[in-house]
Structure formats: C-alpha cells, structure tokens
Amino acid sequence: RLAAYRGGYTPAERRAVERKFFGGELDGVVATCALELGVDVGDLDATVHLGYPGSRAALLQQAGRAGRDPCRPSLAVVVLFDSPLDQYLARSGASLINGPVEACALSVSNEKVLRDQLLCAAAEAPLCLESDRSLFVGQRDGVVADAEAGAAFDDAVAGLERCEALKRVSGGTLAARADRAKHSRDVPLRVVDPVNIEVKLNGVVIDTIPYARAFYELYEGAVYLHQARPHLVTKFDLQTNEALVTRMTRCDYHTSSRNHTDVDPVRVLESRGPLKTGVVHVSSKVWGYRKVCKRTFKVLESKTFSLPPLEFETRGTWIDVPAAAVADIEAKKWDVKGGIHALNHALALVAPLFVVCDANDVATEHVYPVQKRPRPHRLVLYDARPGGVGVADQLFRRFPAVLAQARTLIYGCPCGLVAGCPACVHDRRCSGHNVVLDRAAANVIVGALLEDAAAAAKQPTAGP
Image 1 (tube, helix red, strand yellow):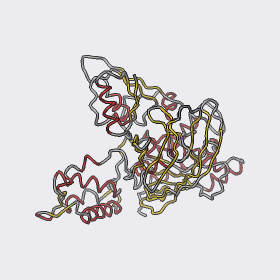
Image 2: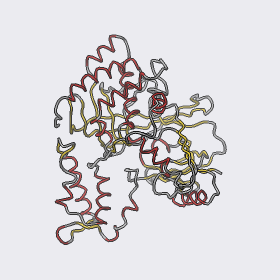
Image 3: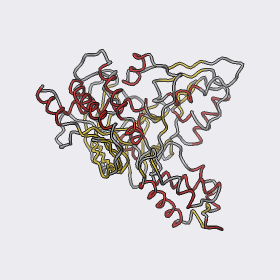
Image 4: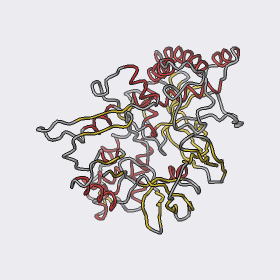
C-alpha cells in the first residue's frame, strides 16, 4: 500500500496517486520534493525524511506536510545518511529545526527565468519599463552595479515584444496578450531547462525528464526505474526528444554514466583579491556507462558510446590555488589534483548550509584517475542550471565562511583515510568515482586560501 510520486510523472498518474492517498487506499507515498508545494495534504500523521534535504527551510517545509490538525499530534523522523553533510550534522549536534533559515538564491540576470516571470507579472498588471527596470538594474549589495541584470532585462522584454507576448498599451506600459493571461500555470517552479525528454513504454508516455538530466539517465542500455520497477532504455532519440523503454522482469545490476565536465571562466563580474565570480562556460560529455552489481558493487561491464556535448553558460565562483600551496604539496609528494578535487567536493557539499538550494543546484569539476586533459589549479563552484539561479553569487559573498566550513568537514571526520570516506569528502555525484582525492593536500590548500581570503575581505570590492 505504497506508491512513488515525483514531478516528472504524467499529470494523470500524479492525480491518481493523490486520489488514492487522500482516500485512504494508500498507507504512504515515497515522494520527491514535488509533494512539498502545490498539493493540499491535510491529514498526514507522520513524515519520514530520508537524508537531510539540503536546507533547514526545505526540512521545515517537508515536515509541515503533517500535523496540520491542531487536535492530532504528528511526527517527523529524519534519517541521516552516510553523506558528508548528513554526517557533519550528526557529529556536530547542530539543530535541524531551530536556528536561522539559509539565505535565498535569486539571479535576476537569467534571461530564460526573467522572460517567464515578466510575462506572469504583466498578466497581473502592465509593466512600466522605467520604474520596473530599476528593480533589476542598480547596486548589488549596495556596492557594484550589475550591468548583466540590466542587459538580461532589456533582452527579455525585447524578446517578449518580438513574439508579441507583450503589447504596448496606454501610457507606454506593456501588458500580456490575452491568451497569455494564465501563463503562470505553464511555468515550472524548479526547472529552468525548457526541453523535456518523454519516456515511452509501448508508445505511452510514462514520465518526462529534463533534457540535460536525460543524458545521464536515459542513454541506450541504461536501467531506468519507474514506480520502483526496472526498465531498459532501448532508444534515446534527440531528434524527437524521446526515450523508449521496455519492462525488465529481473535486474540484478544498476547502471552509472561515465562523463566529464570542464568549467572555464568567460567573464569576471566581481572580484575580491584572488576570488572571482562571473560567467562560466560549462561543457559536459557523457561517453559511456558501467553495469554495477547491486549485491557486490562489482563493475560487471563497461561500455562506451557517443553523445553530443552539453554546453551552456551559467554563473560561477572560482579561485586559483596559490603557487606556494602547490609547491608545498609537491615537496611533500602529495597529490595536487587530489587535494583540489577533495576541496572542491567539500565546498560543494557544504554549500547548502549557506544558501537555500538543492544539492544538484551547485556543482564543481571532478578528476579521473587517468585524466589527461590539462586543467588549471583552480577551485570552482558553479550554478548547475543554465543561466544561473544565484547560488554561486551567494557563495562568493560568503566564501571565507564556506572555506572554513569545508575545512571542518574534511578534518572533523574520524576516518583517518588519505582519500577520505562517504562521511567527509566522497560525493555521490562524482563522475570520477571518488578515486583521486587527497585530504592532506586539501588541508594545505584551504589553509593558504583562508589566509588570502581574510586579507581580501579587508579590501573594497572591485569591478571586472
């Protein structure tokens, strides 16, 4: 009497699960955050949270699905996993409920997001370009003008006018076209990617997956789960934006994509000493997969294939590793790449402690054991959504604190292993399978950077 629930399921399937759940036919639902918002759940008795959701705000939102009847007690159980962030919270004894809510991330320079939001706003009241534009162009933190946001606003408005979604009315204001009055119903709350891949079983759509995510989950040969049942992907067609699957009667392995991602700065928007934030170019290549035994985790088979690269521009924050730290690590015959990789992991893992975001909203570069592509000695965090959602910008403003928290995560773990463990620097998202990691080298780097960051914090913010 259990069912699965996620946003990618068809509306008919989601409504059917909701109807059975509210009607008492189901005892429980295993759900993603899709059940957090927009679903009227009034009679739940308990919530079980499998892993820390990434922020105190998200945890309170999820726990609030139960206990709405003041006459009935409710229960919220948080099961902390072996992930670094969960284990840090378990070791530190930090309160999961009490305390300040993390800062919100908001990017007003993402044109795709702006287009949808401006159209929704114009449907409620006509836009006045002179006064409304000032809300998007001006001072960031009262210090530096954000020209990127102004350009994004102008481009978004121009694009909406070209397609006649916005029309000029009396007084020079812009109003939404009559047939766009309900545009807000078509705007997803969590997805920036405008293209979805349809998953089809016997010609019937059973799920939709965002375009970028599909490259990692719906390649030919992948095992795809729907309602806990395994399906084999037999065709992944980028021309028709669909993936065809067949149901598997038995499956004793899971699949894991093999990929790499390069992140390169394009334009600096702000800097504080060696620390910079701005526009970065992300290029990801999925080039194969592994079959992994469910019982023993042994790699049963590896295969390669060719998919086009995923490329987009987004916002990032980066800092070069001091040359003195590199020299120190090399003198001790430690692994420079492993130290950078471990610290990149730690920074990405603690990011949700400083800004409200999903773990998949922030990403970093990873290192392979046999990697031959030359990469600079650089730490980088970037918004995983095209155009950016504001996470990297918020981390830039809190970077010394993020660095300090990353160091606590690395050396607060009692494992004592050079390459760390799942409770400190291992990241389940690592495309390099957490092989090239060096905690000692990471400690040298973070120590040097904290000294530089402390000095840079005393200096005024500079422009590009």
